[in-house]
Length: 296
Image 1 (cartoon, rainbow, N blue to C red):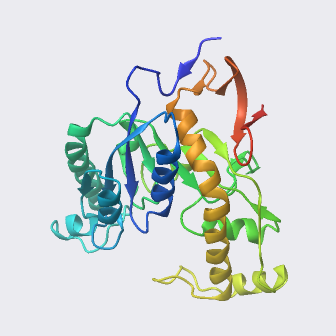
Image 2: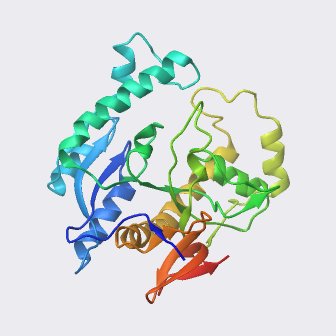
């Protein structure tokens, strides 16, 4: 079997840039776990943010003695006459490519081998320059009619799981894909990691009551969100998933990826190296104990 390894093993540990837009709790968890590791498989070379004023990027960069790359995306758009940072218009997409080119220029001195999207909001095709790992608040192995069901940004996957009557959530670690148009392809990459189940808490409401709230929502979604009970419950469950899902799956999945334990065969099947043998897998479940390969 011919194997294309995503991250080739070399004498130097692979270098990673960590991308973040907000609190950076996932980035902080990764860096904290890395410090505790006696034989780390990767090394951080920079923290990148699109939101220097509203994120903790500068704080984390200082705490972990890392260079900071700050490229304010809102200011970048404003300087070009646009108040929104949307990809909905051709001009918006053109500016996004300009912004991404500037990001490439700023990253070049650090020569990252891969990227870690730790709560990075703006879609950008840096994902086509080197592999970028993203943690997603939904189980992307769940499909309906041959398509991934729990896709989307923010609380959309969490709400979809709740409204589908699922008893639990999982976090997925994927290899993020380049986007075109509005970016629907971002969640289509290989799923290299899955967290343990995290039970859904409906906070005393029934599923019928939540569905009634959903049916009464205005369309399109108001600026600033719905601000209803369903959204509050989704946010609370997403935070619980972050702490009990993201933080369990992201560090070991990143470590295994950097160690060259993931690849693809000629048919595009995901492969995982376990005990010196390449296994075709659907994904790998991480949590307490040894990683559990899920066979195809």
